[in-house]
Image (cartoon, rainbow, N blue to C red; front, side, top):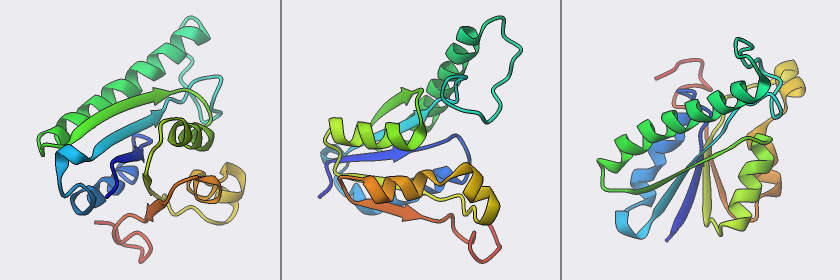
Length: 155
């Protein structure tokens, strides 16, 4: 039985496919602590295009964290209705590093992630968070491509 399960989410619908595995793992909801994690895309942690409409980088970073918390709270509320014990965590570092550090420091038993299915040059330039987590994780990692994604169909 996995007692502490970490599910990193990036805010995309694809990443939320990892949540589908909770029903099979959390058979006794009170015995499993689900930790939803989001690494906020702040100016100091990402080069993926944070909006620059804020007066200072600190304001942009704070807004990114607020957005990440709001997103996780919504997902947690939906899961909480199933009787699951949900905790949310927002960090602002490098996604793979933050996931691995959190898993180690907080004695996580399992990490569940969804892949985005990137390949070729896009993967080479952006790297793969899932691949780095798999290679360096101190605990088992369940990786799930979104349903139908590999066959070219979604849904």
